[in-house]
Length: 484
Image (cartoon, rainbow, N blue to C red; front, side):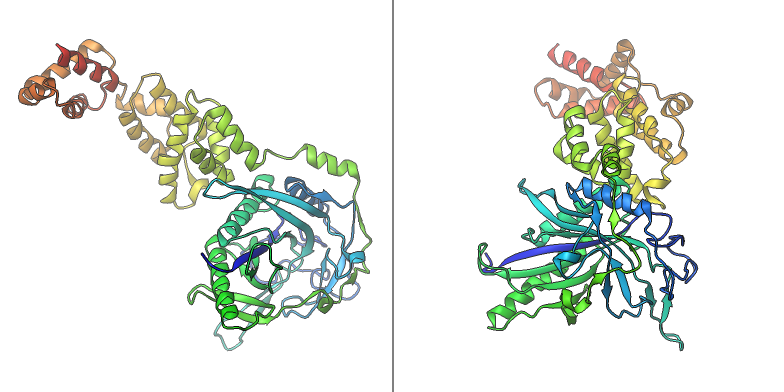
């Protein structure tokens, strides 16, 4: 066991899923022509006046309620002053301030729960959620003209979710990040697409000699855009701080980046504190006064959240904890299964089909889950055909492969290919007797007590019947013959 204990907090930035920017009417669009969606407001021209996006405010409140936060009905806009080459106006409009009098984010004092692999449930505090605008994007290449600036992202609405330093391992940090991403998707607040930069995470970590010792000096690791890199970066920094303290040196407060190829962190700059940003109230906007009735309407229309859906899948559909977890991790998969389960006679079997068959095929499908041709009701019907005895499991896999390829209904495929299961006992018994006669020596061993041979006979009968014989009836006939 290590002699140092990590203390971790996360700062998660997510782009809100609004159609327009935070303080102007410019469209939010990713992967488009550089500088296509810009105006005097998001470029910071003198005299251009910002106006808050009501939908962005609604999304921030919705996220806060989903994370059990208190909503500030009198939030404040502030200016955070610094020079970044990708922010033309030289300051950022945000909701955080260096002094308590300026510190009025729209949401604060929330929490979420994570469940570790060992089954322990831990509550992670949410310090605050504040709204702000995003900066632009620098594009560096090897052309003679050097670096370029794309201002499309300037002014994109952001929420920054800041956790308490309640996280005690890189693994817990990943679980926290996953849970927040999940809640963003369930609430529709953000697309939370890491590849498009909709969500990114900064990890703050310090170490201390015991669990009740004062916090150590922290390092902030910026712009971690995957769960894997978050875990690796925090682990690398933990090891570096351990070596530093063991050598009798002090850990320096700083901002760092993580290099996944070298698996190490490196210093970008010394860590700024609030006074370095020279916060003051935003002079071009009044305080964000919110009607309590508006908040209550948002609360009333909150969708079912991941934890509630997980519990419902366990209770209503009698799923295992593993299956319920897999089927609630991704909102698209979860909604798909939920729609299918409404008409399914056996949701537990349906869950197996989604997890083992559907998701396996989706991995190889260009376009992913959005590109599948099978609709929820079709897979539900396939499971019902098995439950009704119309087809067996082996035939069902053939039907599913055809469904996935063509998008046809299972009933249509079964009819077109003549795949209806044989349930006529006399017909099956005739096939069983033919198999027994052809394999008389093996049947004598089976009858004498070599039970393992039963699978052989079932397989031969299924082969002779083209996979259509009802396996249950085949087993019953074989048992009867063995006893006779």
